[in-house]
Image 1 (cartoon, rainbow, N blue to C red):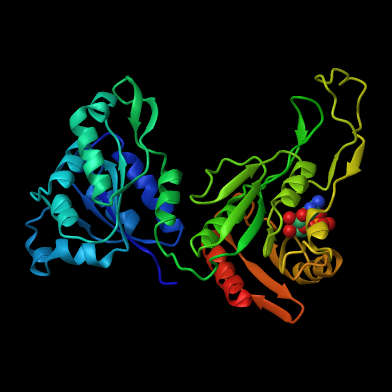
Image 2 (cartoon, protein in one colour):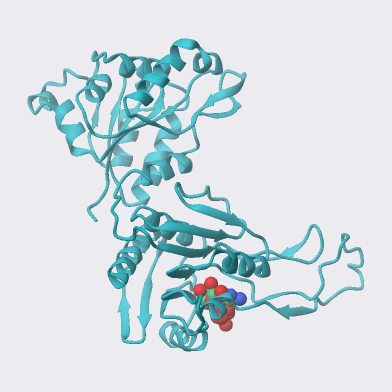
Length: 395
Ligand code: CTP
């Protein structure tokens, strides 16, 4: 799939600073970004910040003669796979709903048939005003998609609906709209992600540093190829990827039960960092014997990957495990492929490079036939490659 291209229009509002974070997330996700900053927006963020983060020149003035020699407003909108307006102010929404074209942002929105996603941000009364709601209804009728606004405290001190959706949520909405195909249509794919939490008592648990990022990125990449995705996730800070059914669980046993309940599936991908053990007993009340208690008795957790990979009528056609290793990567990963009975192992080196919780991954894909070492890639790119390989394998 080609690199997704997004044209970001940044309107004038306090939330414009969050557009910078959004650009950072999009770039990390492997998207190419160009930006247009409205006159209002330039009071909140500078063209230089946007240019540095996008690594592209920033459009602002409709009458920029250099850009307009090449009809900048037309070229920009044709270049993009998606136009994102964030923050979409009441003014920008009003202009777009009524077809006004008196600056570069509004002219671009009028001159395009590229899909548009708006993330509104404004004071709650401006948002609930009948004029804005009328414009919202008109824009929706014109095919514009929306993400947010959220409810919460606003810059002006009031509380209500009108806050810009959080950048990771906007990113999800963007991802759901670009780079789509049907290569996995009709397939049900089960993915586990994140850590598990094994309680000692109501307030303490054993867990690990898994962020869930890789599994969530894979879920999103598969959904964009038309798969029906069930994501069984331990506690993470990540929003559910758009279009994906997320089942949230705590313990390994809950994860196993949720996986079994989600079958049948054609593919199972186990990225979760499942705790190998759990405390033999989870105390019903907070433990109070810290002076005398120096050991915790543990019992083994079920191996979810091994159970799903076992032969049987419900075994998915393709079962994929992940192996996080700090040494002897290939040897250990190959051992897991055999021991767990899965079809592929994605081996990743987590030795001291900040993979756990980070955004990049260096992996080797191992199957019965051999090994394929991938270069260091973002977790989003690993997800794209894996999704492509799965689609090709299922045919
Ligand atoms: N896995 C699982 N259930 C478990 C343990 C692991 O489903 N109870 C899955 C993981 O999701 C991953 C693969 O098995 O896909 C390998 O996980 P890893 O923790 O690396 O393997 P372990 O079997 O725990 O081996 P070790 O801890 O000895 O490295």
